[in-house]
Image (cartoon, rainbow over the protein chains, first blue to last red):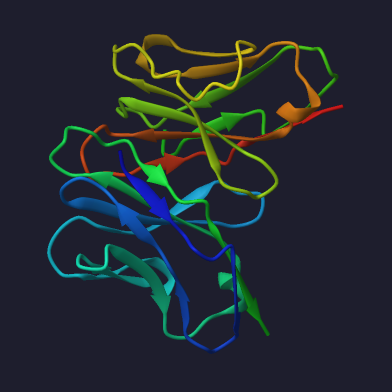
Length: 115
Length: 114
């Protein structure tokens, strides 16, 4: 069975500074990896995903994530944080080639960008 | 439709009453999921429908919870004899049912049991 760990419940960063939200995963075989963002009182919105190919994936709102197979990680990054990036971020994984497309989600990381 | 639609967006009910929450997935999406989220916390999986297969009900917390999906489209989550601990946001998501596709979430129903 697959699993996702988001080791930080909360990340605080100053506006304009780079941000990183960490995610590690466990899955049999090759993974499909996703990041979702949830703004207050909203559903989850898709940010980006890794399927295959280039390990650096670029997504919405200037976010990017780097797939690292040896470290089984898929950390979310942004070069310069905005106050409007403050939200709850979820990492998710599903196995490839297993006929399964059900996602397993991490517990979420609350990002607070301080003006 | 263009997105996943959930109704109502907010529901306040008295303890002991039954409630029905509705999810209208994206047209053509064969997979539909229900999750529960308490106070901005993580996602608790409830139930999963895929096409005409028997649903995966492994996440339903008690027999007061049930869900159905009619005609492979609209789904209804029913909570009988609601309790205060049922208060949460109930999120629905749909997917094309293809590996690597991911989910599209609705905006959720905020349920408050008083």
